[in-house]
Image 1 (tube, rainbow, N blue to C red):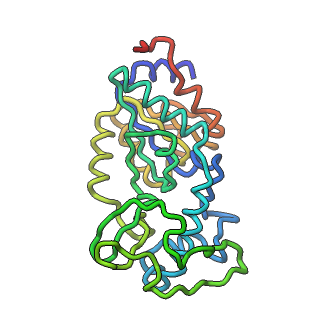
Image 2 (image 1 turned 45 degrees about the horizontal axis):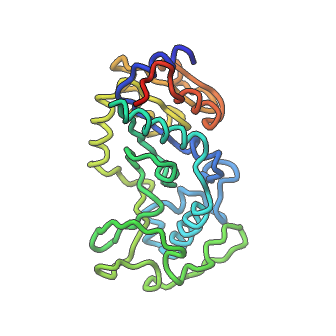
Length: 269
């Protein structure tokens, strides 16, 4: 940690790549692995264009459940330390960018400004007809979804008629969640912005995502290959850990705050 803190004190452009692990301590379910079910499905069975085409009501119930759940969740010390670090360093002419694969907006809630959400957001919709993307924090998102989306295996499909699902205010087309589903490609504009940040960063943190899992698997090694220090904050080490300068094991809410706290060499304006 002492060595990391010396590198941190000198860094001018810090890129922080975050995944599901950063939100786990806020009680956000991942819908992956054992116990990761909504009713009798895992996310990869619902978060696809095919599932939405086949049964838009069921997919909207799943996302309605996740939206309502997220409204009761709060940023944890990991999110907060990242946001506070960005605010503090920006006053010193230094930059912090957060590149997240999370769709929960907890970084935004914590106060992060420079944020690239590569997988979209639970709180944005996209029209399947006109393509319009809109922020949407309504609860429920439409009257027909009120009280729907119960996650238990015994819950029945609501079978909401497609005309009663969320509709576009501009063209009345069917809305979908503005998230990247399995089998879809990332927004090329966001990817370009990410590439630019990774080219200029002089310190990279990989937080709460194994460096085997896309996108960190793609981003962090290319930074490391440039000779830039990469620090991994994760519950367990991964086969990529050996390639990185630093690895801090444990919950991000415990390991990250001391790593990003003010360094004694910082000039506070």
